[in-house]
Image 1: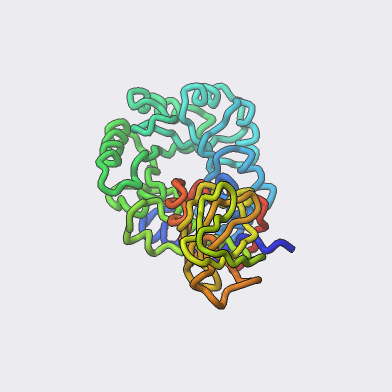
Image 2: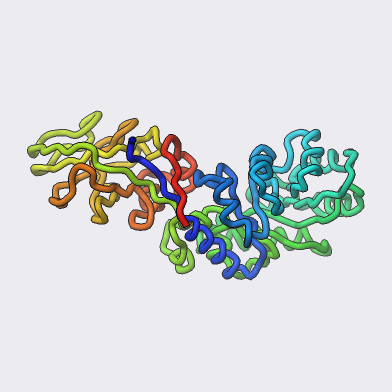
Length: 356
């Protein structure tokens, strides 16, 4: 059996969720959209269900999969609904729903529902993707409060640059939110992972930890609270072949790496078809049998090559950690010009094995 796999540490997942609660002093929706960032939404939700205040997903398909798996906790649809006829399912399954556009508000007002919904009213405070304009926010709130189809309204927005600790944009967005919500009575949700870790002054009754749940930092610089996170996924495989090359010989497609000295090359059963970033350059960190070394040569669809020259005891069958507790996913992502969010979400083909 091919040795490539991803090991998911559910105890580390729970640790990271508890850290979000500790740092925020707030209730926390565990964000499990995109199949829990590649970690397996159903298994991750089950691992957190006894202590999570709820979950957040992108769309109703993701929410229905959790309900079908027996998850009964609140589930928030972060993008709301895409068609008005989804409201019947939202009511049936007790989903919470983001409203970020006037047409969604109108659809709720016009719907025939048997029980009121919990609505999270989203303000565009400066992200400029979705959300109501500040000038229309208070009126939308009042309409929802007056609507028999709505039982509770939570006020929310989303930060664009909270992962930049020295950037003033987060405080500017906070100011915009506070101005738009003057006089509006309701619980507030503003803090995503970087805001939970790095912006304690931002008020939130609800926080929405995403990437931090999976143990990866959202910051490009060292950050004290992010250092407390525990990696959840370990992407690993084994050495399946060893080559001895003289100086001057190339390795792999395009001769992107040429041996500067006699080089011992290990071939690993892992490639970009598994989700390892194709553009990871020579020098990207890798661990073999617990010892640090480097990627060499271009990543292939099913294989990649690593430098074993200074690891004389490593060879056929040696365990290779591509990212995990020793090789941080954030370091691999940075080397590849990517982010941990993307490399986790790109994971495919490798089986997920759960522990903890």
